[in-house]
Every structure is written in C-alpha cells, then in structure tokens.
Image (cartoon, rainbow, N blue to C red):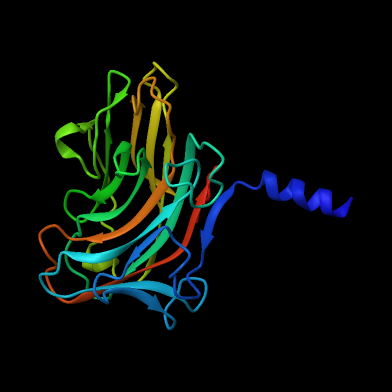
Length: 258
C-alpha cells in the first residue's frame, strides 16, 4: 500500500526536471558545452545552496557555452519522461550578473521542439536579450501549412517569426547586477487548427512580457515540447570580461514561482 501511494505521488508530480547545480552537470544533460572553459560548475557561489553554473565571458567573446535539457517524446529517444508529450510547460532559472555588469547578451534560454535527428525544429520559444537592458520573447515556427519545413538546427530561411514581445525590467543594467533574479517562462502550444497558443515571461514573479493568440504548429503533431536550453551566446561579443551565474533550474507542468 505504501509503495503504491508513493508511486501515485511520483506520477502526479508536476516537476519534469530540477537541478540546484550542486555538482558538475556532466552526464546529466543531453548536451553540454563549457564554451572552452567559460561555462562551468562553481562550488563557491549559489542561490539557495553553495553551487551554481558560472559563465565568464572574456572581452569580445561570443560563444560562452550551453546546457541542453531533453525530455518528453523526441527523435533521439533520450531524456526525462521520453514516453510523454508535453504541450504546456513552465521553466524557471535564477540568474545573477557580476557586480558592475555591463551589456545585454543576446541569448539566455529557449524552449523548442526537436523534430528530427537532423536537429530540425517544429517551433521555437526564445527568451533573448531585448531592448536596452531588458529581455524579450521572440517566438517562431518551423511549420508551414501543417508540414515541418525546417531541415536543420536554426534553419532561419524556413522559420516564420511570430512577433517579439519586449520586456521592461532592466535585468542587465549595472544597477541590477550583483543579486539573484528569478526568470520564469511559460509556453502553451496551440490547439490544432487554432491560434490560441501562449508565451509568457515573469521576472521575480511579475509579468514582464506576454504573447497570446499564437499558432505554434498548426495541425502538425509529430512531436510536442521536448527541450529547454540554457545558453550563453553574445552575438556582438562581450563588452568586457565579466561573469554571470545560473542556479535552481526547474521545468514543470505547473507554475513554479520564485
């Protein structure tokens, strides 16, 4: 009876993935790049514990490394809960920039659908650097007329952009540096044949940007949401040598909150 109860509790848990970064992430993720030593485990700095992931950009550096989490049904047959389809998720991470931080890195994270072993994608839910010191939501689809037209990762010629929503919180300002900020995003796929999808962003529990009425993938349903990426990619290069940290990374089927 006790075993059955514990199993039921486990099945009903909304948590798909949780990582407090108390140890090196090697082996826990679908893919991990340390950006030639830039993106590494830091056992001396953390939000709620002593560990985190630190990315140190050198002046002018573009690629600072990444973590790729795979889950749900996917063409690789790997990752957490890979026998399930997820059509709505929330993901949260805490981020801190070094005191005296300057500049807005282009990339922070994205939810996506890996739709083939060629890394082609069904849809893209980008949380990126926006105007000024803020973040933005930049959704896109790789589905046209209910058919996947992308043939590789970041297949820009075949992507359709669905419209940016700019945030307001100056999270990358020097004034906001040196403290942990809670970043949470939500994606809900559209009902087939309807434009009722959603994409939202909260910072420290306050809604910062939102898009409603999205047509993420038409009637296409080969795969659903199956990946969340944490990224350190500064398109124009870092303004100076400086660090930021990620901690308390959670992916869930329900809102998470600070």
